[in-house]
Image (cartoon, rainbow, N blue to C red; front, side):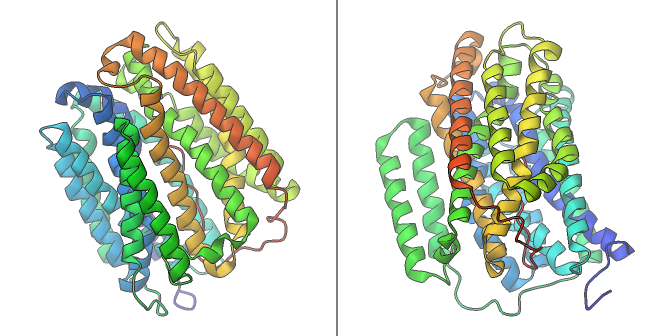
Length: 475
């Protein structure tokens, strides 16, 4: 122990790290394995494309809308306590998902899962932040990120194997024993911590307005109805107005956007993760529906992305610190755009080795060059006292981008109704969505080149606040 902190190389430190990795891993595994199971669960429950979209988006909706509130609850009432509540909540919602008799119940259970995720996700990093001393935090965060990347790689493979051997319901039911393990380890080995200065009233109204705004817009985009979209936009305007009125005690203090670089990098994040959300939603379905791949083979398609990010993210971050984030991010995002253009050719008769593996490898190279500089720039461009808020804002922005893109782009490309039952219709829509996503990546690259001109990394020192980590692909 050092000034009340645990050393990473101690037994206690290893237990804390294990708990946070397992807790985050449960949420991460679920977000990656579900996409692989979509064709199977859609066929079993008689779901249409809108049902599949809601299966993905219901989780993202509540997670994105409540993740900032989840972090605040942990600071106030105890990070371990809220983390454990999130784990148990997530497990119970997972059981409901696994037992769902119809797609409506599944969607409702997925929304409940997102609430659990909003409680446990910020808690994992907050526990690391409060448990380890300053000298051990970077290594602890690096280990957490790396092991989380392993979970990201295992997820699609595990999902494919479960769908083929035990059925899609076990994609959710497997969370129960994993959650029980997390609870047992956390209760025994993780110390409680809280922010002694946390006081005042929670911005519950702000969180509610944000969630309702996203829900209205998402519903309107999926069902192509204008009234919910307008209602969602108006609620979003009310949310912004409320945050301006309540700042700096608001859910999102407006002053955090005083940095032009911070505002710009979040706009880039929104566009970039919107494109990524469509890719991760549709690619594994396309590989099964149109290319005829097994769930296991389709689930392995994105493994090169995770492996390359594990190997290259740290060097990319160092390069960005030396020369600035502008050029590495611009180049990386452009490589992603090129990969998506090539990905649009995947269809019936595609070969895993010739048509899929090279493209996903190229996509992984692009993300490796872009994501680490993006993450570092978010932290470096925010004031130190807003480090935790900056982390939450960037995570929420990334997830919101993916949420809205998955809701809007597939229907506009003709992927509605029973499209996933027709390889021809699905392939046509998939090709269109990949072209749209490539265009969005191109826009993100242009925004990066035009707006991220200042090298905030070279003048920044490691912060002592909560670290910023952009969601890994697939989260």
